[in-house]
Image (cartoon, rainbow, N blue to C red; front, side):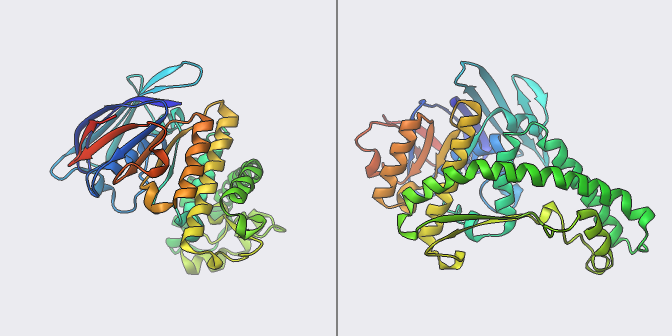
Amino acid sequence: MRFDKLRVAGLRCLGDTELTLDSGINVLVGDNGAGKTSILEAVFLLSHARSFRSGAKEALLQRGASQLSIFAELSHGDDRKSRLGLGREGSRWEAKVDGNRVSLGQLVGECAVVCFEPGSHALIAGVAEERRRYLDWGVFHVEHEFLSHWRRYQRALKQRNSLLRSGTVNSDQLFSPWEGELAHAAQWLDHHRRVYLDMLRPRMFARAKSLLPELGEMELRYRRGWPEEQDLVRQLRDQRGRDLARGHTAVGAHRADWAIAFERAPQREHLSRGQEKLTALACMLAQAEVYAEQWGEWPIVCLDDLASELDQVHQAAVVAQLMDARAQVLLTGTELPVALQSISPVVFHVEQGRLTRLL
């Protein structure tokens, strides 16, 4: 899978920007704040319908702009081509595939982008929501029914939480229909999350062993969000009184989490920031590998500020792996990383939101 052309307008500091990408490694160089990361953000938005950067959605818009747009021409390994578009005006998003208006879910299903960036350590050290997003994005690309079950779950959860906050009485007649719906969708999500983690586990272990051999064997732990030995419908009913006091549902698939432990670092607090980043990188590469095995082509790989995130040994190892996989890579830095100087990548210079191809 590769982006052949990309056109971005109105995203952060990017005005009207267009570039033709190589199928291999593409490097964006320039000063900090020039707009390099915004290019990666654009392709990530097409694949996730959200940014990997934190902050308000309003910050996506270029100052003074009323709308933003992203357009890409995409080629697949089977020679199929598609045209993807994502636009936003005000708070409304509009997605298109081959000129036809589609849902955001349909757009996200058309392409796959994985990203390693300065905030990636949050996958290991951050809140559980980051790890659920990682997990669910992978399940989405394996199971076609994921989105309908996830939406079904979110609807039931929202309705139950509304009842909890309304001050209504603890009534089976009011709560039981939504609790049954929530539990049914939760069981589906839990099952397929487990299946996906089983697919990830050996790839993740192999990547971690390569990147972090000093930490010993790796273990992947999963919590589904409610006690393993208990039926969720019963758990929701039993906890209803406490949930009424809290005003929200405290158990369920929305509380799921997973964690990584190493033989010589059994708690995540034992990891240095650098080790957290390498562990996150192992997770990203493992997810890309699983996608490739499912679909016969690697996702597009974004590496933001690689030289400052990894030492030269790890940079070279990652670049070699991606070249062997024949993945399309978009990589940023203030200058061309040493690990790339011998392989003649395509290089773009970025300055004040404008791109110029150098090599």
